[in-house]
Each structure stands twice: as structure tokens, then as C-alpha cells.
Length: 535
Figure 1: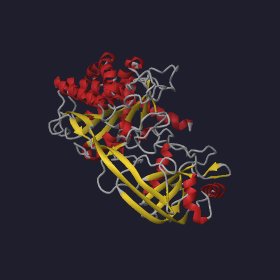
Figure 2 (figure 1 turned 90 degrees about the vertical axis):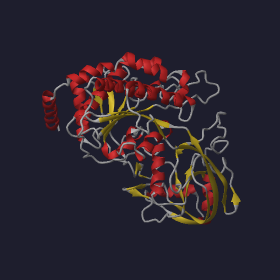
Figure 3 (figure 1 turned 45 degrees about the horizontal axis):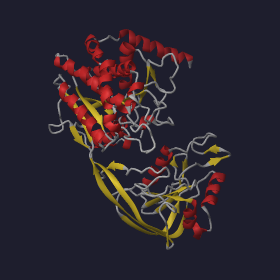
């Protein structure tokens, strides 16, 4: 092992020796300065922008600010002469009109909860299929050999099968199944089998007064209607969360309880799927309310006739989570200075550097699309819509360099010697070793930061690879790099203020993106996609 590491280190050293700094790039990189970053971020993360929540006036202000900057830089408006790319976001006013089991009507907020959904449908069934923990993993498959097409499916929504205290999924004694990510995976497993309805059993039996989006929570705050992209084609099956009491009603004819079924699975360590005769009737409806949401696009055309049709994307989401919901809070605004005012600021400063190079006749050979995404905090909506409806075909998009939170010191680096000279790099080698090398080379030649690859793993429990806009490009086999400073105590809190931003560090991280972009936009060949697409 040591010998292998030594060989790789020497190879990297040799590559660094023969690599040459680009004096032209070094001339324009200083435009990306702490002072310029401070100017932009002090506006974008001010109280006047009200936390930039998608669909709210603050996000609209931010979109216009970005578009005005793109125009001032001379970037082209390529969306039919506009900088604004309409994203089809809707709020779903979803309601379960009725839900009954064996003729007994159930009560929302007590016997079931359905906080979100799409479509309008009436379901009448004579049976349900219980599928244990709803896991379709290769080494433990609750769904193997079971036809769920058009069926009502019930599954346990938390926990995982164990044997002798060891997880059947992770192989460890520590349960790994308590995260929202695992819950979403269960849904994805079951959805792949085309059910009519999914019933998720919640053993905690926690209900929320009001029962539906828009109802009052226990803290007296209002729940926001969920936002999604307007769906084309038939709506996906919905998930209704039920407590154990309702689950037992559904299982009554079998003579078993949900607790006994779970115990049987946990003790045996094997799936215990079965069909239960039950009359079930569900009627639900959805009203779609359009939301004003736009991505902001600024285009810099390339200078090389042979390469200008190829495009590098530099992206960052400009939305945040908006105003504080708690009526008793003293600070009313989630300013989102780091998340992702810092990334948006990075995009603007990098755009200025490239635009100045272009004005001076030193512009990049390939084209660059500067992309401000909306709706990231609502589920990566802006980037999903763009990559599904690209203004520039994705086969011509060579890579996406995505910047999300680069203005702070993450909790793992507080007090460390290199706290002001690092950045987490995620995803660079997952689809393209060429892209990974380009990122490393830019850092070795110019910024000389510590590139931390700790989270560069799709299996990382934090799932950062899946949690920002680059992921929607990666889904379409576009190579990506995600630049990130890590989470901190003010993540998604009112304390994420401009006063806590390290502007020299923000500028240095943005310069790393600039140098990487410079090399990619001017290279003779685009990065080869040679990695495995991880979804």
C-alpha cells in the first residue's frame, strides 16, 4: 500500500513539474476579489431581499439583480432575447377527500397524514400488499418476485431488518436507516413496481394538528404548500403516512398486528411480505397553483469557431429559505449569505473576470453559460427543469462547475491551521477522470488550497453529492464539480449573515473555479466521460 501511494505521489509531482501557469488567466483572476464579492453579497443577502425564497418578491429581486449584472458585463440573453428562463414550478394544494377501511371513515391528522401529492384519483381496493421495510436492495429485497402493479402497498417507514443485532443492509451494528434519504429510497423502490397507493407506517405515531399543508403546526406556525415542477403525463402514486393503529385496522383479517410483523422480520432477518384482504377506499385531489420562478442565464460566446458550440456551465443557486416562520423570532430574515449568496456571488465575480478577458480579445475558446438556479431549496427544481429542457443541448455541455456555500469555515475546520485555505470538492472524478485532473491541476498551479475529498463519495451518509444543482447535470452524464465549505452552526438559520462571511476565502475559492474553468474552456479536448453514473 505504501509503495502504491508513493508511486502515485511521484506521478502527481511529475505532472505538476511539466504543467505551466497561464499568464493570461493570472491577469484576470484578481478581478475576483474580496471587495467585489462583498459588494454583491451585501446586496443579495440584505434584509431587503427577504431571504430570496422561491416564488416570493425577494427571489424576484435577486433574479433581476443577477440579470442586470449579466447585462452590464455584456453577457448575451439567450432565452429568446431574455436572461430569464421560466421554470414550471407549482404549489400543490393537495387534499385527501376521504379515506376508509372496511367501511370505517378515517380522520386526517389522527388516523393518517398526507402532506403532499399530485393528481386526482379515486382508489377502491379489496386487498393490500404488506412489503415489510419496502427495501429493494440487492442483498435484502422485500419486493423480489412480487407484482405490485396497481396495488395498495403498505410498508414500515423506519428502521431496517437486523440479524443478531447486525443490519442486514449496512452490515454494521449501527442502524443506518433513520434518515429522510432512506425513506425516499424506500419510496423509489416501491414506485419502480408501479403501485396505485403507498401506505407508510410510522411507529412513532406522531401526528401534526391540521393534517394537511396549510394547517397549523404544533408551534402555531403555518405549513407552506409544497412546491414541485409541473408534471407532464400521469401523476405518480401518493404516499399516505399512517400510525400503527390504522395499520392494525388494515391487517385485521390476517389476525396479525404491524408490531408482530415487524418483530417477525427483525428476528428472522428475512422478508415477510404478504397479501391481506381489506376493503380500502381513498379519494384525493390536487389543485396546482403556478409559482413565479426563473433561472437566470448569461451567455459568453467562445472565440474558437471549432469549439464555440461546446459550452461549460458555471452554476450556483440564488434562492434561499425566506422569512422566519416563528412569529416570536427577533431576527425575521434567513438571509442565506453563505447558502447560497456566496455561490451566486462567486458566479458573478467569475463572470466579470471572463467578460473582461473577452472584451480584451482574450476570451475563452469554448462558450460559457453562467447559470443562476432557482428552487434549489425546494428540491433542486431550477436545475432539474433546465436539464430536462436545456436551452443549450446537454450533449454540447462539457461540464458543470457548481458553487454552493463557499463563504464560511465549516464546522470540521474551525480552529484548524488550514481553516482559511481549503474547500470540499465533490463529484469531480465520478464521471470524468479528465475533469478531476483539471481541477487538481488548477489548484496545484494557482490557488494551492487543500482540496478535501472527504464527501466525494455517493455512499457518504450526508449525501452531499445529491443535494445541490450539479446532481441534475450528473444524472444526464454531464461531468460535474461541486465546491462546498461544509455546514456550520448557521446553516438554514437567521445567523447566516454577511457579517460572518470570510471574503478573502470566498474570493480564493472562486478563483479556483475560475482557473479550472479557464483550463476547461481553452483545452483542445473536452473532458472524457469515463466514470460510472451514480443515481
